[in-house]
Length: 209
Image 1: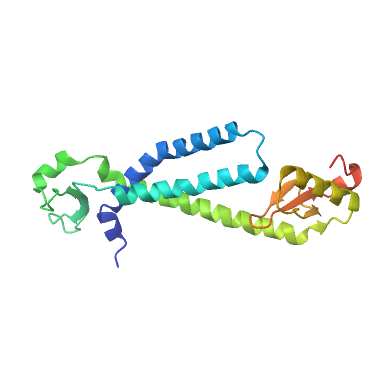
Image 2: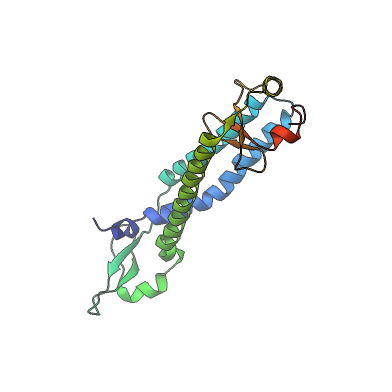
């Protein structure tokens, strides 16, 4: 299957319009999230985390619903020129009933929709690069977690449990020392782990940590 067929349809135009709508939709979701957190300043960490998580989940839902609700008409389609041996592609518009306009009227009908395939490809490249960056970050955090040294100091562990209780956490996150970091770090999504620089074990008291 020719991958250009995907760019010939209304797919790219609908995505670009959906992304433009997502600018105000994402801002609205963020504003609602901010207002909820501002209304409950003394809420537990679990409540705040759930509000932020629901906000993140609402954003792709808004984008998907907007895309499927859009109806692009007239459409933009890729056709081939026949006036040159190389058969270079150019953009032609179609009417709402699917009847192509004459080639003489095409030049005056080029709009921003002509560049929708290019905009969509740039967006797709950006998303792919971010996914690659995320995968590398997850791989790096897993490496740090494997090389970490679990903390065995009972005083420090008791301090961590007390801090988790005050924050309203369901579980006490593991705490470990790591030689490869210079500042305290939190890694992991499902089971987060707190990593402390190895210097914290000798230069600070448990209360200072």
